[in-house]
Image 1: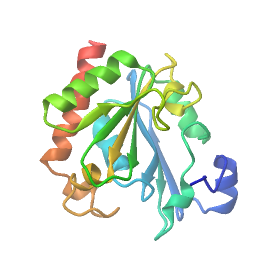
Image 2 (image 1 turned 45 degrees about the vertical axis):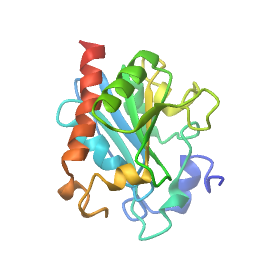
Image 3 (image 1 turned 135 degrees about the vertical axis):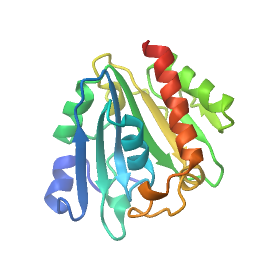
Image 4 (image 1 turned 90 degrees about the vertical axis):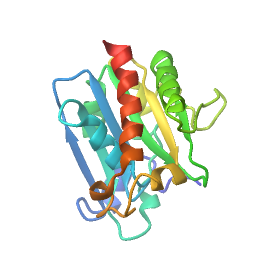
Length: 205
């Protein structure tokens, strides 16, 4: 299904900031950046993964759907996403990881992006911990290997895109609503984030 808006400027003219959508970000003295461009109600759980992964140490950015319904209208594909704050935050990162969601009733993560070593390390950590995960093939529509994909627009020109299934994201929370998710994260959520962080530690230290 094609996006309703081709870029952020089209969305901004049609939607209301802090009512229909929200933007939050933090710049830290870190080479690591976590972000999601389909947060809030667009692809549930991605905002929480981003905020929790960044903690107080790393930079982060979230573009979030706040609508009561129809948040899918706010989806701008990764190769077209050009909200200025998001581009700025990502451009400062050396090691960039984006969280996304896709529709599937099986718990799984499709691991993509152009940062090949980090991509494989994250895949190894996830599978070793018992999570379903697969390296996304080059010909996939969500492989995340386009140079203009926002995940690959950091300082090194490469990043890792994690596409989590609906079932996997739902399993992370006791209450899967925008108001309830962050307060009801469970051990499965924490273990998942720990896998990503262990891979980063191995890669960057």
